[in-house]
Image (cartoon, rainbow, N blue to C red; front, side, top):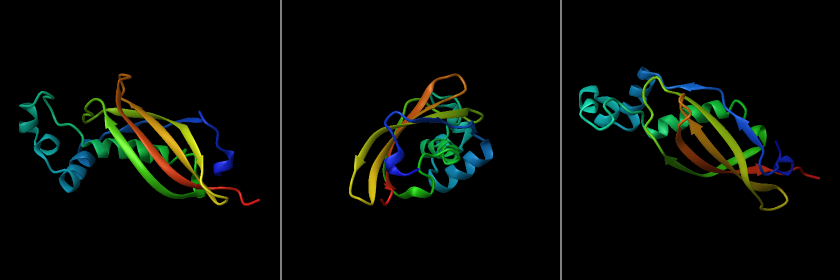
Length: 143
């Protein structure tokens, strides 16, 4: 979708993303190798009582589902920034769903604009587990 066609408040829902144990462990071992994510015995001694998913992995699981319905499509030029705020831990087996809303539109020039998309991500119990604000540079229609 071109920048010119977007409106504030546009919203899409994502399909469910399941946090699978083997995928979580593989991600954690490669990118966030701390005992809370990889050592079940250690995790049992923490306030969480079990392994928690790396926060970035939880976000990326939902992001992958968002890309199936994303606002930008082929008109995306580049990502600019993202800010993730983790609210609650995500565990193996959790089912995450997200809601993405366009929350700011800033024209930059005749060729592109900056679109801000805010995400709310919930687990299967309806608890918000994370929020994210992502900015992207998106093509304008060339009139």
